[in-house]
Structures are given as C-alpha cells and as structure tokens.
Image (cartoon, rainbow, N blue to C red; front, side, top):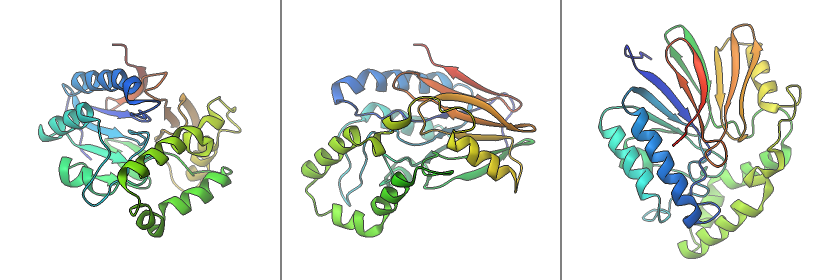
Length: 252
C-alpha cells in the first residue's frame, strides 16, 4: 500500500464508548473527535482496531442509540478521501455491514497484513490470539455463531441492548478486567503469538489492541509488538511516518 509523501498512518483502539454510562462516555467521545480533527491534517490511513463501542449490535433496521459525534466525524474524514479500516473487537464483534454501507469503512473480523514502503504489518484487535485464554475463546465461538446472532435478534432492542450493556461491564471475560496488568514479556500472550508468527514469516510490526496497556516490545530482529493501550485511562495511539512507529498520548 502506498503512503503519500508527508502523510502518516494512525492507529487507535479500545475506546469503549458508552461505558460505564452514556453521560460519562461523552467527554471521552469529544476528546476522541478532537484527536480525529487533529490527525486528519496529515493522515494517509487510519486504523481503528476494535472495541470502539462498549457494545454494538446491528439489527436489520436498528443500531444502538448514540455516538453521533464519533460517527459523524468518521463519515466526514472518510468522505474527504482518507481511508479508514475497522477491525471488530470482542465488544463489537456483532458488527455487520453498517460501517461499510453507511460510512464506506471496510470491516474486518480477523488479522490483516499490510506493507507500507519496506515495512510489513500484522494488524488486528488481538482477542483470542496466542496460548491460553481458553474461557474467552470458547465464549467467542458461541457469541460469534450465526445461530447466536439470529437468536439475539428476536429480543426487542430495548431489552437486548440493556442485557448486553450489563454483561459488557460485569463479565470479566468480556470486559477484559481480568488481565489489565502487565504480565511480563514471557507471559504476555500477544507477545508469544507474535514470536510464533515470526517462525513462519517476518513482520516489522505487530499492532494490536484489546489489552488496554500501551506496550512496545521487541519480539525479534527488526520486529516489534505494539499494543495501543486505550481511550479510557491512557488515551494513547500509534503513528507510523513511513520509517518509524511511535506510541503517543493525546493530550487535549
């Protein structure tokens, strides 16, 4: 993929808009919109790596209420010609085609490979990858099945959304609260996943979200694992200028 001269690639993940309440989420949404306004000046590509919403489900004719500021800004940026790519996370894994049809933003449900100049990237949300995490992996298979989605659609949206929002906050397997501390390089399962992938193919950067911890760790010769942190406590994002990758904090 060609990166125009003077342009940069931006990465962000785990905004969890809507949590813990709509009222408390709005200031974070406003901050994220300011960041989007800032980066649109030199963005060549924007990657959103999942859990933009704390819950998202697309009925055939209904989507969750709210998030107008964020959706409007994404539409504006995409309409200006800047590519945006969205990777579903464990909180918005029920995303279907709304982003594609309404915002012209491609949606991916698994990792994707990209090459910018002489640098190769493996990009994704990061949930369910690597060794361990078996409880979540089993749960994801159930939730992601077509039958589960079909069954859930029979719930009235007012009921379905309320149940999902409750589980999203309370269930540690879903919320990710069970592993928000650095586990050590030898126990970070996405680090282990990256090292395993390097046995078969070289990547310059592994870029993931999900862990809610900003991390930049060497995993091999000329290969770096990056976790983007979140927009709850860290407000961190990644930026690649064609040569180097930085992990930065957005200060309003």
